[in-house]
Length: 170
Image 1: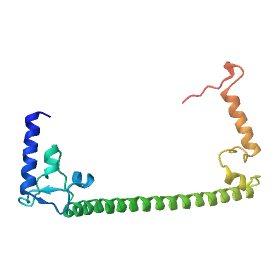
Image 2: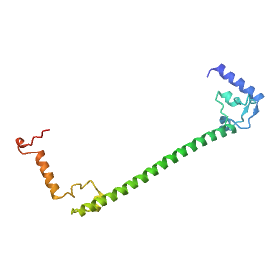
Image 3: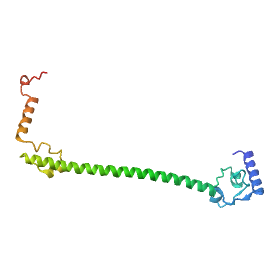
């Protein structure tokens, strides 16, 4: 900071101290440093810099009750909006979990029905095993006819003599 500038700050600070009044609510700097906050009377509802902030060339931040109330109201509104948004997300999550649970229950019932119909057809199926891991043993319930069909398909897919391969035409 240049010397003429600091002299100007000191002159203004002395003028504020001479003609100003102690502020009912100190600015942040004076409050934090336990200084007496002396400021000029408000002009058009706006408080001017206090003598300490003017002397140091700091921004004079006055957290008046009006300002604090405004900040509290503003952030209370934001908190309320966030809580409402969170409630909507939680509601959607709970609904999706309920639908997923219902779908899993229906899938379990359908698996039991399928196992019962396979048993009625003469196939040996362990319904509990199919409930635990339906895809792991997908070929276990096949009948001997199905196994022979699969064997025929394997023979078609990989013939021992390429000349024996069937020719498919449309």
